[in-house]
Image 1 (tube, rainbow, N blue to C red):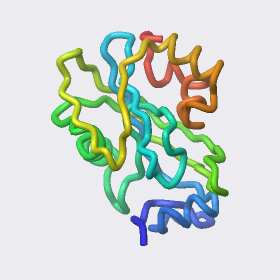
Image 2: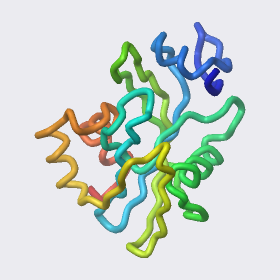
Image 3: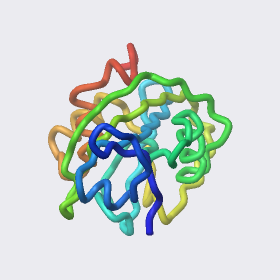
Length: 174
């Protein structure tokens, strides 16, 4: 059994198995973290063992909060678990909603709390190989261009963020 995450069943928010949420396309809570060094974004390539979108490039970190876990706590926890980044101040940038097919008959219908963290090149990154295959720092404009030209290399949610939500996430950085 996978983790139980906050999802809406009808009008009620309740804990539901993560795989069931994605198979049924239920609207659910999520967190996305973006770590920047000036105009460069830290991106990750998802591990090949991930149950959806393996090997695709995504934002710094994304996940689902555990049942009754505050999004702030979830963002910090998962940044540490996936990339070994701890004690980086994160600022809440708002909440977005999107729906996207992610392959294998699964759908992400997420209500996402967005977090932005500022760092510099000395940031120590220690990816968990079960979660992250690779990382890179990339200029936002270059990333947006690559995602437009070769969308198959990027997760659906990163493409949505870059196309529709740059100002919400990055403010004047973009």
